[in-house]
Length: 219
Ligand code: HEM
Image (cartoon, rainbow, N blue to C red; front, side, top):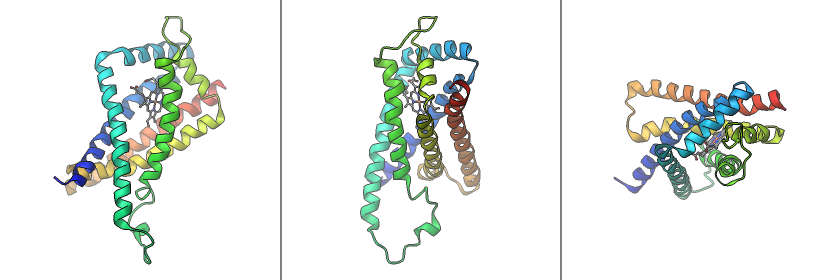
């Protein structure tokens, strides 16, 4: 197999794994929408379980490796594509045959990466290494940290912009991942495409609803 194909397969596999993480992560985060008392207890217990369980810990390491791998290969592919396609075509019709977001995966990915750095610093780092208050059960009160973070309008806006970028990024990503992995017989193409679009819409809407709901309900 050529190096380019290996790279594309790794992008596809890590991308699909990240989508799977996004489904589980959204399900966990939707607990934030429950009535406050129940949400606080449930979310903090859930966070403790997710960070303490050895199996989930192992999956987390796979997740971090997937994020790093996906980003590193994305940079390599973007540089290779730039070098291969050259610049300044006199007659450039790429905009006619592909969607704008397909041609801007690097840009969308960069917005998501920037979001991820802010996101991990504020929640993941704080939970693991910060000094968080405790709730009634003696668990770290991550719930209060998340709720107060979404009290700032600019912060909610950052999440909404990043989630829209994530939606477009996934739209192209899911489509091309199935193509790269070869599980793309013609008859199934429509089904896979619309399945991918459906999942993308659900995830994007779900992730947008959380900060917007918290902002208007609690601040
Ligand atoms: C409303 C949106 C979101 C909320 C409220 C949220 C909340 C959280 C919280 C509280 C944590 C720390 C606790 C934990 O480690 O599980 C966390 C971790 C994390 N989040 Fe999010 N998140 C959101 C969206 C996203 C999105 C869209 C992504 C990816 C693009 C993402 C990626 C991650 C990653 C990679 C971790 C570390 C997970 C681990 O250590 O296993 N999050 N998130």
